[in-house]
Structure formats: structure tokens, C-alpha cells
Amino acid sequence: MGQLTYQPWHLLERYSNDLNRRIFDDAEGSASSIATWTPAVDIKEEDERFVLHADVPGVDPHDIEVTMEDGVLTVRGERASETKDEKDGYKRVERTSGSFYRRFVLPDTTDGENISASYDKGVLELVIPKKPATQPKRIKVKDL
Image (cartoon, rainbow, N blue to C red; front, side, top):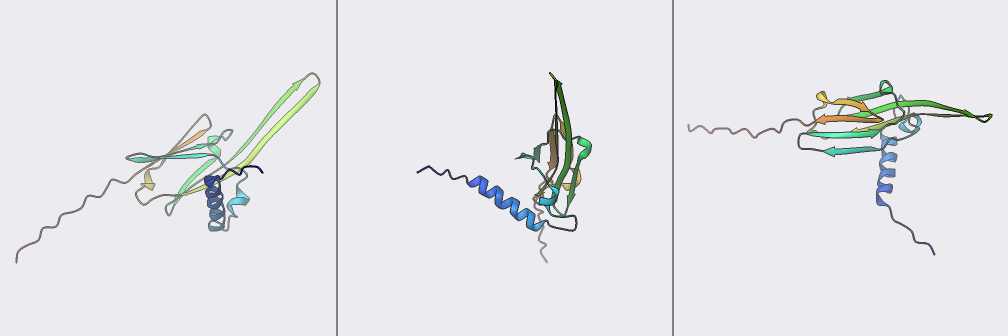
């Protein structure tokens, strides 16, 4: 009898994808009908910001759309590439294409107005600053 490996993160990712597909079905179509591949994403929290790195090789930065609405950050885009190889009488053409669509619910501590995006060597970086921490206000009690 073979050994079965339990992979809880895979199940959690599948649950998250199913949940997103059900929640975000709208007039534009479902996330599953829009996306043909899902880029790997790393999210790191730092003291004053969140940094998100998405692996999007072969995607032109002009074909990436990042939007923020009601605390939800949406990243979508499309890639299309073609490679040709010809030698010894053989010709090979490979095409890669497809769209991606990811959504992230951001905490209330983020500053959605000052998100910045950059692209370098197939990696999209989004920097999401945090709002300054609100300091408690001391209220003086007057003696009447």
C-alpha cells in the first residue's frame, strides 16, 4: 500500500480559489473564465508596508492592469509569445498565451491611495504602504 502525503496548503489554496470564483462572479464573467493561468505570488509584511511579488514571465508590463476598489486589490493581465526554431529542414513554432486574474483583500491598515507598481525581469512588484498608526487622543476632564 502506498503512502499518502497530506498537503494542507494545497487544499487551502484550492478552497481559496473556489471561494474567489464564487464570490467574484460578476457581469464581466467569472474569474475562472477570465484566467487561464495563475502567477505565483509572494506577500511580505514589513513595518511600514506590504510588498507583493508576482511572477509574470512573458507578460508585457503594458498588458498588466492593477486596480484597487473597496479594499480589494485586483491584478490582471495577459501574455502572448511566440518562438520559432528552424534547422536541418525542421521548423518548430511554439506559442504561449493566456490571461491571469488575482484578487487580494487588503487590511484596513493599508493606504490604498499610494500603492506603487514596478516590473523587472518578469516580476511585478506592488508596494502597499500602511497608514500611520493612530495615536490615542487624551481628553482632559474639566472640574466644574
